[in-house]
Length: 221
Ligand code: SAM
Image 1 (cartoon, rainbow, N blue to C red):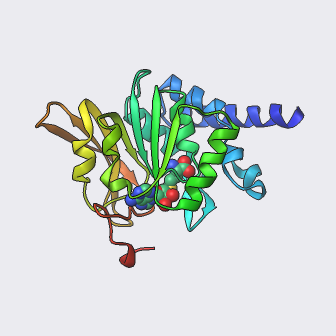
Image 2 (image 1 turned 90 degrees about the vertical axis):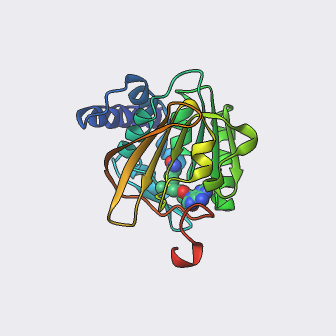
């Protein structure tokens, strides 16, 4: 019980830290306050889970820094009835935070082992509005499209055409674009079936998006 209270206190501090850094969306901050990030990392890293930092999750990948998760979710302008696609499940943490904000989350991970671990976490924590799939997320999830929002947790060379096509009219896609060291977080708004408005939000640092509409696997790890 003491541990539960302690972790709750740590989550509240983290959420206050994110608010001080400029995150304004109250629902996003509340969700950060609710999701037990320490259960999305290995037990040895649990004590670091409420630092605002990325942590290793195996397969050469990381659970994103909480500030970046909050920034991307806020930028996607989530709304209760939304169906949202996430590319890059990783630990499942961002999908869990998102699941408190929207109706349904679809998430794709290219590493089968990470997807399996995330699935087990969703089941044990009873996140029953999240569906996970293993595959190349650059091609989206055609059978479940269109999506009101799409969040990409890895940086591609360009905005994948398939993801733009799978956005609903009025939908928002948030994606880091560019080479290591020169990545920009972009938001794409689909204003009509033909029109997409693109804006650059800030500089960021992400692992590469590997796939048919991303970077080639043999060039990158
Ligand atoms: N959202 C995750 C979390 O909360 O733990 C962090 C994601 S991590 C920064 C980026 C993830 O994107 C990695 O797990 C990586 O394997 C995955 N990834 C890279 N390219 C991908 C692709 N084409 N399709 C699906 N996942 C991909």
